[in-house]
Picture 1: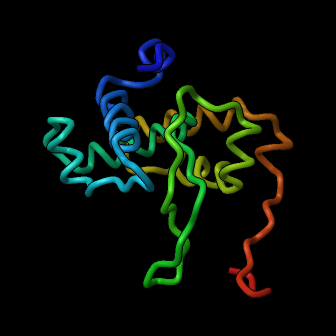
Picture 2 (picture 1 turned 90 degrees about the vertical axis):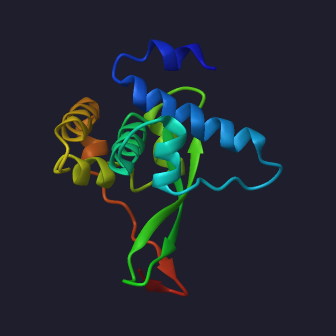
Picture 3 (picture 1 turned 90 degrees about the horizontal axis):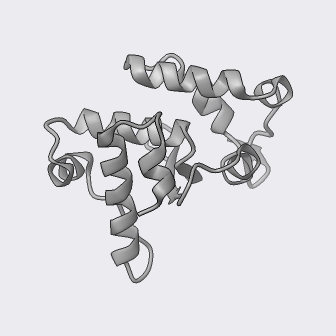
Amino acid sequence: MPSALLEDTVLQPVDKIVLLLVMTIARRSTGDAFLPTQAKLARMANVASPDTIWRALSILRCSRWLTSCQKMWTKRGLIEPSAYVANAKSLPIADTLFLDPQYVEFLKKSAGHAHARVRKIAGEELSQLPEEIRNRQVEQPTLFGIKI
């Protein structure tokens, strides 16, 4: 268990438990590891609501303990995160942006999240970023030369 995780004052105990579950699932896998549903993760973490798991995952991504590094198409045509890296410590911003070019956009979206704690953490993370990173233009991904 990373000591940095225990010492992180931004994360609440449920956030830490969810990250430890994610790390445990990844370590037990012999290949690609897939997270169970939010409902199953909620049972594993002994929390009442799958929404608590979603909130914890959002906070872990905002605070760079989880990094989205792959996207996929949905039925609505949107690109959703489909693969994450569980980090042994909160990643530096340069590493996060390399793996997840949409991280700043995620923070901006999360600053309007329904849960006050997610909004607060996303806002704090955004405010700590240099202006040139907050305002940088991210190239739109393309598929066969067509902007997605």
